[in-house]
Image (cartoon, rainbow over all chains, first blue to last red; front, top):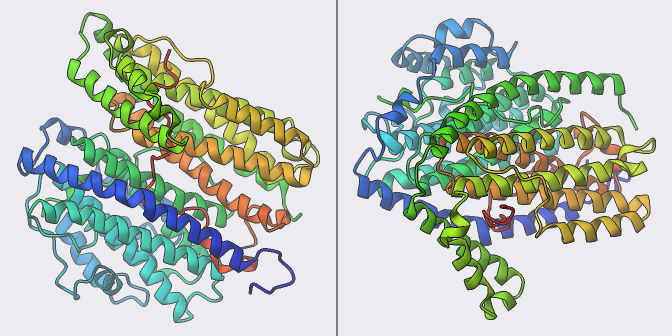
Length: 297
Length: 289
């Protein structure tokens, strides 16, 4: 619908002005505060060495990968299919292979993922650093953001190519804005890694990405894409919620706490667009949370 | 108004089933807190470092509020006096986490009462109300009541007294807004209600985000983390509803919304920040007993 559509009083200019005001507020207030938190967190990590966390944190994160995948497959429903579970529930290395094999799909995220993160195909960085403690949580978060970016980028690419039918302009704006925010989150997480002398993580989440890729290959309309995006957003929000119990640095907690609600806001809008009740739970859970322990490679 | 109220009721019921599952997951942190509260009451002393850190954080927060209020409080030295009081042994006797939880409870008390008042208005909770807005207000009030019960339970688990009164700093603001709402015609009243709800939801979300780095008890952290995202979701939906109301498109507030009709910018109106701010967070001890 154009701004001049007589059916609506909703002015594109009005909304753009509101968005610009809110965006200005975000840059005036939120980003400087975040920069302070990141700097403080970096100092914390340096002062504590690589790990910066006691062994109890590992014990708090004994999430079963199969449980995650079961729920993920259930959430993705007809898009992902139960067959994905078998393909993804093996080891991380085999999951990574599955990601590679499914990357040939029409709406595959793999190529888009590397494009989104600035690394050329096949050279995604960040794995193999043997991180521990807060830095392991950060690496998992960065990889999850990369998966989020990849999902939206692949969706936008498919929409642009006409593979999703008619895509409403508001859906395109949602995808572009959510992707941009995930890029901001990824940069924030990676800033902590690079400040600690580590490589930034430009690879996607090695476990969830095969599920996303397979689902993307079957997406034929915006509803299916929104369902997949909802799974990604809920996974991200729940992962950071879980991370808040694991991260030891106060500044790190501030950073994760500032990102978690935003992922859940994305989820609320997706629920709404899909015709589901937008705030389904009085308490958000962690059943989809990705364990940092998966990020050992 | 195109809406299938039966379908909407089904969705709410489905949501309530899911909510019941989530409530069960919130019981874990609360049970942990009971154990910790018993240990705390058994004789552990307050950590002086923790108390000092809490006072510093509150001084910073109070300073921020004073600056927003024009600096008058800061100029008169009131902020320093309050911050010193907060850092005093007498104030800290109830413990940092308890104060944080009491403040959270006070915000939830205000939220519940505000939604209850709003639902008494014919255009929010009456026969002339938009069904989606009415369902949202009703469900959201229930969710805040759940949050209140959880924060109160956590408070008592840590040996504190549960807060049952609204946050004193925000009561005058809410009262003033409610007075304006009751005088306004329905066409303007709905927007004023949404604006007030947005303010309260943002205060709640920002306060809980801020509290995450203040809380020391693991279960209190888990509980707060499980609630702050929900308040942020309320904000997202209220921002979307506000945009439609401001444009005079109340008829488009349906579930699902008429996405194809909406302008491009509507897609991003619900989540303006990549990082959730804390500038409007309530001082952690503002609602403490």
